[in-house]
Image 1: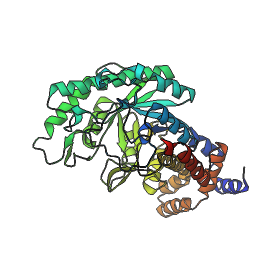
Image 2 (image 1 turned 135 degrees about the horizontal axis):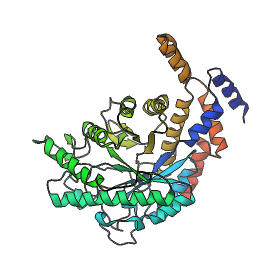
Image 3 (image 1 turned 120 degrees about the vertical axis):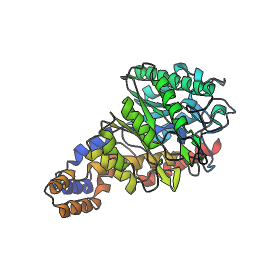
Image 4 (image 1 turned 180 degrees about the vertical axis):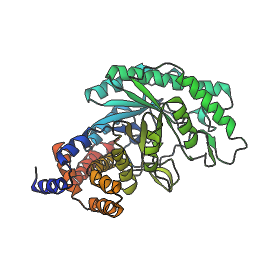
Length: 416
């Protein structure tokens, strides 16, 4: 324990904050690590799989992306060295181990993901899961569960059912609960003449998927909304209003992605409202720059506001935090480590806020003191507590992390 940390501890104690308790809590909050950062959302369905349809775009061509499951796992292990706290792994359905064979998405099963289960079990990591409703010929026209063709809808319905069954078996194997997230890219690039019919088809398809009984002890379903996407700039079937209504009506989780709304909207503003009407929330923490560009998460105002709201709502046990950014313009290990460290920093900072004193002032109608306390918190010695947290977890500091990742880049990534 450094003298710098002891000094910070004393300063926080004056505000009634126990930094030892805060560090323990901050480390215990699971962050779900998205596998798709490591290979630019390509997946491993076939050796020559091609992206097609669905509004997914990764920019950049930094060398060394993972080309197979073994390389992806090695990169995840490397990135995890720099990320303190509890981790989960977030898998998309296209990341199964298919043995070089073409397995259609409506035919995938648990056997294709058992290797991931064994790998995560050895690392004491939970798993979250995602059906993949993009990068497929039957998604190339921009519609899946809301498609006009019943045969196409049926294919994607069966894919969704298969994924829920896989998630349930993963949960059983790990004695844990998997969060299965449903995001569909369906929508029109230009103005539609009929907004209602696709949403009705989407609703019916989801009802059919969720009608299959799954043990919620092992799998919980979440539905993800979006304002617009690439190729669906004018109309997204699964809008916020659509999925907010669907989640409330059907008692599912609701996914809020910080890149899925208008640039002037913050998902922090939505958390307290949704907690009143849905059982739990799943967050996809990203950073949109002008559009849903999935930039690397930073220790910025938007991310701090998200974590502050979760903590102030007392909802760390009801809000699941998943990461969702993919940047191929920089070293992908750096992207993972930097983005997830930033999220953990924001959680720590939120837990160090003098919320009790802020609320005391607020309840006394003393808004000046409330604002003063909020400002005072910004210049408290947060960095000293973060450094102590990392030291206890044997996590390298920023400069040490950069040097270590550059060595991995030289010795591993650049040789691929």
